[in-house]
Structure formats: C-alpha cells, structure tokens
Image (cartoon, rainbow, N blue to C red; front, side, top):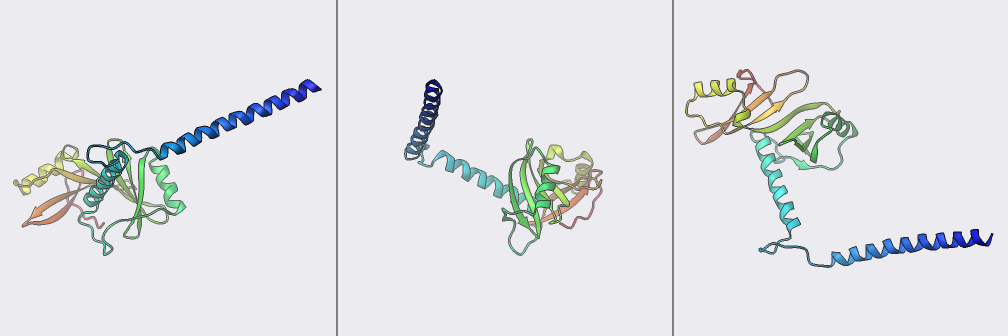
Length: 201
C-alpha cells in the first residue's frame, strides 16, 4: 500500500514538474517578445514589410479585377462575417484555396484567394450561389481566337493581360479585355470562341 501511495505521489510530482517546465518555457517566449524584432537596413520589421507587400498586392489585384465596374461606395469593403451558405459554398467550390480574404462588393460576397499559381476572386450571392470567379491572366492564357478578332479589328491594339471570368452553370468562360481609346479605358467581353458577348457585372 505504501508503495502504491509512493508511486502516485511520485507520478503527481513528476506531472507537476513537467507542467512547471512548460510554464517556464512560456515565460521564455514572453521574454522573447520584448526583444527587438529583426529589421532590414531601413529599420522596418520584416513582418511589417511582408504585410505591406501583401496589402499592396491585394489592392493591385482588386483594382484590376474590379476595374470598369461601378459602385458608388468606391470598391470592395473588407468583411469578416459571411453568411454560412456563402462560406460553405466557397469551401465546396474551392477546397484547396489558400490565403483567403473576404470582401463585400455591390451586395455580393467576394473571396479572393490563392488558386495554384493564380490569384482569383469568387463572387457569391447571399444565398450561396456563385455568380462568377475572376482571375487575372497573362496574354499567353487568352484564347488565340479572341486575339485574332481583336487584332483584325484594331491592329494597333495592345493586350498584355485580361480577366478570365468563369461562369457556373455550363456557360463558356468570358474574357474581359481592356482597350484604351482616346485616353479612356473601354472593356470588351469575349467568349472563348472569340465572339463578343454582353456581361453586366
């Protein structure tokens, strides 16, 4: 009986010491917080620099994705509380999405995320229906039929990139092409076959 009591006491004491050891480790971590953060030559912390770079990339992406659309509020606004139907639909549609951030634009919920080598923005109605997914693509990703139509109509046209709009429900992908005419941007929409189409968003 004494041996069992001794073993239980020793076990309890050991667990307490291990717990104290972890607690001391946390104290060291707390002490580390007070240490100076690694900085580069300009004095900015590397974390701050990385956050600033990501913020700039998001702003550039949003500007290109939404260019040519109009909203009196001035563009997408950050959002944290999406309806359950919207977040569930997004998880179903893009289970491997990375670095997701949510905004609200023109009454719809938008999720901008890493999608392989591309960065995409998916647009959802409040009921969870996906309106479209937009991805900035390079000239090499624009179908040849579209480029042939554009350069046949305007040989001097300059097309560096486009917005690929993937529409659900079996419709063909749409490509939004930006054209500068007399200093003013105009946007043309084409399906993958090079046929001009109307798209109202």
